Length: 184
Image 1 (tube, helix red, strand yellow):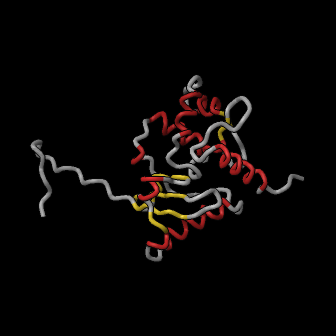
Image 2 (tube, helix red, strand yellow; image 1 turned 90 degrees about the vertical axis):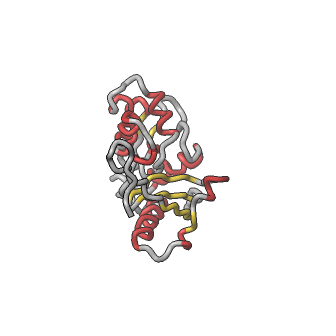
Image 3 (cartoon, one colour; image 1 turned 60 degrees about the vertical axis):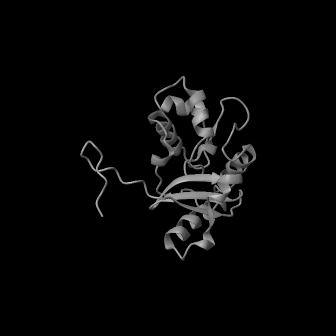
């Protein structure tokens, strides 16, 4: 079989690989996790409607050490037994611009059980006055849990918005605080 050659003479690029989409139950609701090869490209907390139909239960897949490892780590994290997921991810399919990627990479540097503000992330991302943009990017984070946007708070009171809802954000923050060993 020959590759289709466009008028420019260069071979046409190969289509991107079809993602694998898996749904698993969790302590914060169903999680839809999308993979391309071994990289997570998207996490959807409690998908509904058409989006829910894109994901298939883990039981639909043959035994996979890789999937078992990924979902084992997520389960351990949500049980308070793991602090770092240490999973490969890829922003490529999300279509994020460079600044959004910087925001998410800076957010990923926020330590377990610690919080930062939208303003601190904006400053660390090189645009100190862009805290509203930081908030907008984090509200659409394609990789919640993997990129811990729940750890980023407004400068004023409250927990701010979260892709999985404010109640889940509060639950995740409490889980992390309570799973730390006592000081002293």
